[in-house]
Length: 159
Length: 419
Image (cartoon, rainbow over the protein chains, first blue to last red):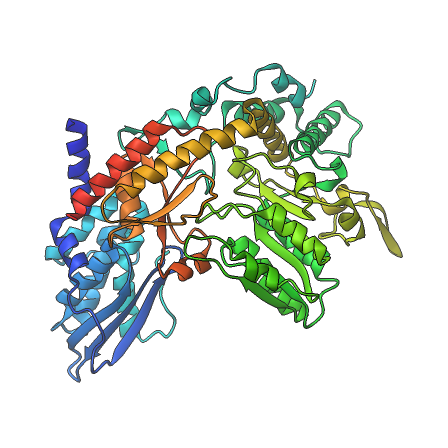
């Protein structure tokens, strides 16, 4: 019984209440009326698919963001948390979050240097680090965000 | 003494199917602190010690190239490789050993038929008929050949239980159909197709039939002569052998008439710049140094299965599948996909609106290995309007306790997701 509850605790680290909440009721889910930048993220092996919509104003600030698509709890929660985080930020800051999240989840310090950013509630995604096959689920939305900002036409994949 | 002979001296495995789990070293481990429950044999099955030892014996003592040298090791390697072919010939009751071609697996077997049997004869307007429940390996080779020749790929529909609609299939078998390619057992749904009846109907219309038997051979007796199929393809790693080795059975008359699939060493009798003479069957289709240790492992897997008895395996798994289906059906919010009357070893399901990958991760955390996703059968997922499913699949080493662990783990999923 003890071992079962320990196992549950470990899983709770991945499926934290915040993650489950965002997975069940994703924020900013749907299309945007005025999209300036858009990108698609597709993990074909997984079947996870999402579209990231952002609106950047003339001052270079992300004034709105939304996403739609389907995927597992981790990928949906990550996309939802992403939109919550970046709305209102200058593009440059949003990209810093992109770097910090990818660095934090993949441990890849070569591409994404430590920018000292406090991830705040995005830390809830860090549970995936113990589940190598699920890291790609959590990073998909972020790569789509980066792709949208860079205005790449090709869908991105994290597989 | 060859590896073949040495391993034959030891008993292939446990006498009783209930005890055969202990023949599989991989099943004795713990995963995330729990004894492993392996319910993913439809993706790839575990190997018994008998197979592992046969391969090891071959690698340690008998390895050399086959059909080439006069030295002792080359002779032993050739004996082991050809001995494996004899084991397979007997196992599937092929007419003779020339009809048993070693390939890298089911996928290559099907591509071989597409390129060597179909491509030379297909004309624009000709048709290849498959079913909606095929694995991608029995879809894409036909799409390629259709692109190359201008032929058309037709698909026989399935119903919501996951059964092929037989009337529709038979109705599509007209004079333009040059090949019917069907699964024996659906990998995503477990449906057993009435292949014997379908083959007889196709033959009444002079249409040859290829059967993808990857999911059938590990679970039931297969007699290619009784089926009267023209081609039968399967893989070593689904039947407790190694990866990278598989079989194409073909009727000798077809294989004789077909051009080689690949050119190279071993598939020739004489090479001259003014023309090359191809080797006899089965070597005509085995260009280059083959996967010798893979064949040795496959031969050992065949002997292991024979020692258990395929009818025994089929009866045992049938009962186990019924138990698994009943227990799964009793879980709240579960949706079973693939509910055909005649099924083998597989149950796909969804739990509430929980994504299969989340389900798979939580199960894995409790030591229960299942497959999640589209199972290389995306059209099946499209039929049901889902992106993927969770799939539990059985092997002869599973038992009731494994199913009970699966059910307990599913309750844990519901608890975590608060459904």
